[in-house]
Length: 110
Length: 121
View 1 (tube, chains in turn brown, orange):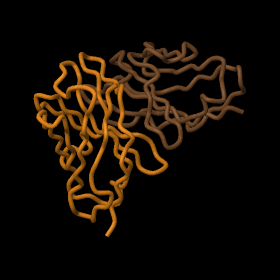
View 2 (cartoon, chains in turn orange, red):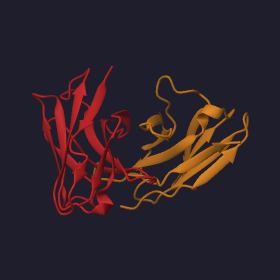
View 3 (cartoon, one colour):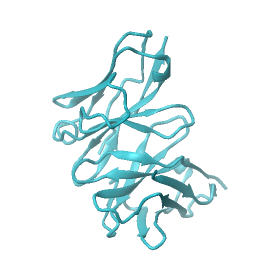
């Protein structure tokens, strides 16, 4: 079970859209529509933003959306706002009721 | 509103066993359809799933940690616990407990604030 691969950092200007990728294998991301995304502000606990690839929990802005193609899942944030600046982690079911996280991506709002 | 709170020693000596407890309030740990998990985050690094438990006692562990991890549940106290044996400096991390949605969904919807555990002599 290996960590999923995410870019270390992405950036964008307010109002723009950004996409964060999360690459796994045919044993995790590629096999299950069970990818979730978490936002973590400094000193805070993670917060789920997307589950089951593209589902948004109640209360999460519709500016956040998720998708998947093959072994790669993606999180897109549209209409970027200053408050979106945070670390983002993907997570996937990896078989036998185990999960694995990505290494995390730091989003900077310019 | 469901709340989770981690508790336990903040300092553990190398080779000893790390022990943490998560107390759940505002809901029952025996609710069907939910697992209860431990996730850790070394300083400045990413998240690592340690393992999860169902109220019945069924457990699932990260294969890389399985030989050293034990997760247990006490439904009478609405708590679940983590034991990690033979710790080294690499186990220094912020340890979170979280509720994991079951029924084939596997995501974490409620998190504790985390507790920092340092492994040092």
